[in-house]
Length: 213
Image (cartoon, rainbow, N blue to C red; front, side, top):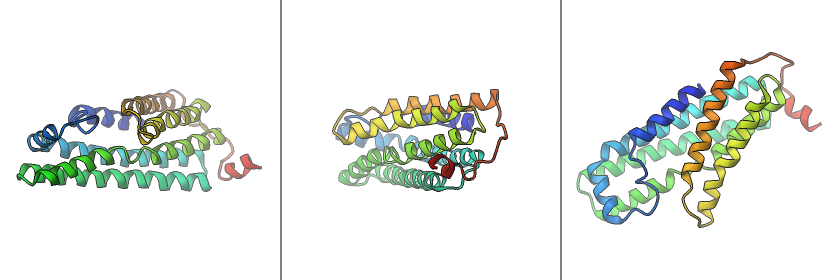
């Protein structure tokens, strides 16, 4: 699943509209691009929603591997559900943007949707790292997979949340940092699980209680 998600993630980079939704895009460029590249915007929205859905499935599978059903597992489930909801809402926003621009809608409406589409593209920048961190901790506690798998998830989550915090603080767009960390995590996790499959020690259903006690 991790390698499949990595492949879809890479496909979204090439099939989508590139970096147009990020950075300092002028009003004129935003209007012209939206009118001329509606299909690319719709594809981007669909792929982003698909990516977060597959991400949610991956996190559920990793939590299941850990054998946990405690509070961290529930936090992970809530976080991935939120991430999927955010990106499918974003997909609808981009579809509306493409439709309005191609039908010659008012410039103000197109610019409003373009700005909102750009903002929502990074709205999952907290819930995704939260889910990854919870899954990483549970994998470490479980002992069912190589420990590096858990540490890799925690490290990628830590690096991935930095761009969101920097942008909220008024800093530059560091989106590529989170993209690279996600690639490393997905490829690393997929390769690790292929090379060394899951072992089956003591079930970790109560691992959170054991670790805290």
